[in-house]
Length: 169
Image 1 (cartoon, rainbow, N blue to C red):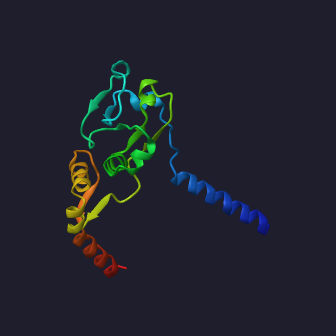
Image 2 (tube, one colour):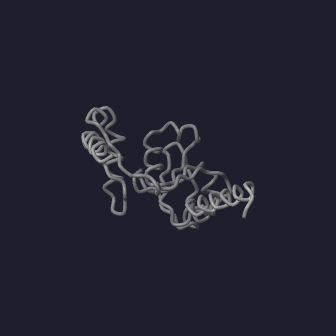
Image 3 (cartoon, helix red, strand yellow):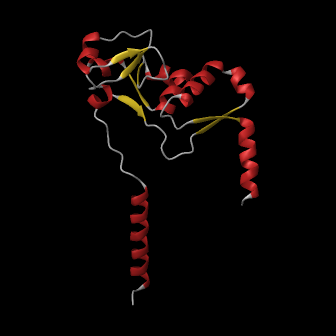
């Protein structure tokens, strides 16, 4: 027979094991790995060294939707730019300052991972499409890319799915 305290300790240990099994350990990416073969979108107010890009075998792109590294003048501006934030968060990407690229990753950066454990549906109303055409365009391109698991739905679909959920509860 186990004492009450021993039984509680065993239960806690099993609970911790279950939680650890469900949460995958995140591997930290090395800065070089982020920049090597990167598709870099450079803010028009920023200049970066082309020699550094050649060393990293990185290319400069103009499209928010295919970039995976976003070079911005300040992090505050990046957080306020809805285009960059939407593209970076949906596709997964890295926000960084020019020094991060020119130093080969020896400065700080903010990396967003692609969503992997969430339902990847974006519901947009017609009013949102009219009010925010640029953001809607980015969402539309990202969801249409091959390999993207994001789905763009109309808000009416959301209402229908909520009604269906209520029926099957």
